[in-house]
Length: 319
Image (cartoon, rainbow, N blue to C red; front, side, top):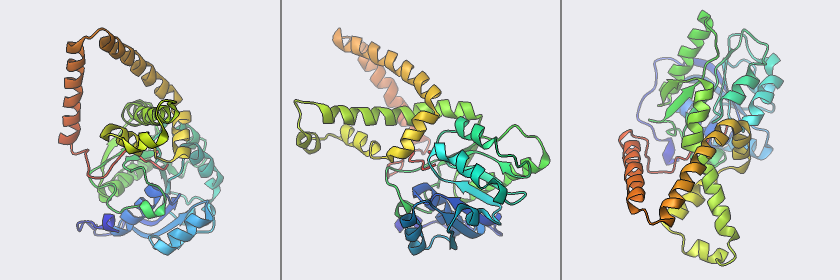
């Protein structure tokens, strides 16, 4: 795949001996592809609950082993990455807790961190280093064929470490940071609750709006489905692209991050009502002031290098 092309950036020696990726969707398969392309690990084992996905992963060959079970995948792994819908991450990790290697690092790629972190905190393995994570990268496509080795290049990965101050945990955090940097990402450490509030603004509410506006258009009695498709302008096409994201994963996102989503949704609703009043009363100066301010934010996104040729709407398969 063209997305697997990377500039030479291999490291002198692998950071981990065995990487286990649980979930072979777009993000999970991209982690495996990138780790292999950059020489970040010696060997890669993957597992997915879907037998058809496992078969496709085997055919694509981005891992050394497609395991028959989660337990088989994590055995001997010193890095375990859960790339699954948010509400399934902690139960899956707890289910294989006894098979995790002493000294292993356990992380995830979900776009909700508080609920995941609280669930993973129940893992009674002080010899395993739990470091929740979230690479802010993706698209609306899904499945193992959608993965790309360069997916994380220049993107941000947020890590939300536990409140541990022992030397072993600090080394594990440094090692995981180096892993993501080797994959091309910029790494930021953040409190889990703050992460969820930030992502509610930058990803979760935009997805909710997209799902809702596309649903509204589909339900309009005076507009046929054919007209919605035929006359889609650029803005609506962008909404449909976002709304094409994995419904299971986004169901989990909104349920797992409901407090932050509802908080930001309340603020958004107030601002939307103010905008409605400005339109109703013909307050053009207010409208222009808002549009000018938001235009500057768009320029800031571009200047920060967070605009890509391909859509990158936070299709986090874990989140």
